Image (cartoon, rainbow, N blue to C red; front, side, top):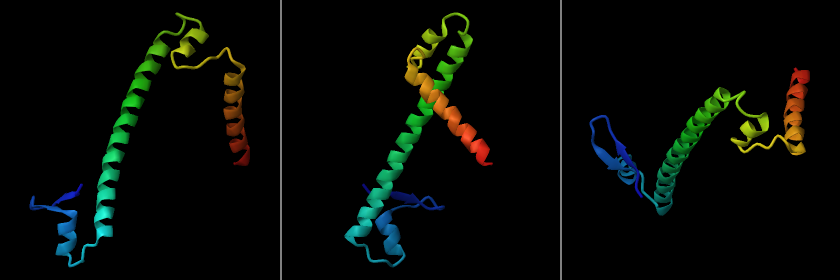
Length: 108
């Protein structure tokens, strides 16, 4: 996989060609670096897209949760998010988060 650059004059050239233009001798390692950089950018774009879809889905579900408060018991509504408020672990974890916030406040 070779990364393609586009100049302001719309001339396309590869990473290898770009480095050759600058007078650098291209080694196998440099080609590997270009390939890793290209792959990394594709992975980053893919992950960003997944995160965005997750956030948008979460926001939609959260709006539905808020709109349906009063229609169901809290435990039923929380289950929509995979949260079981009937378990002690939920309350222990929640209180631990609040405790960390209090500690941070006290440090100020």
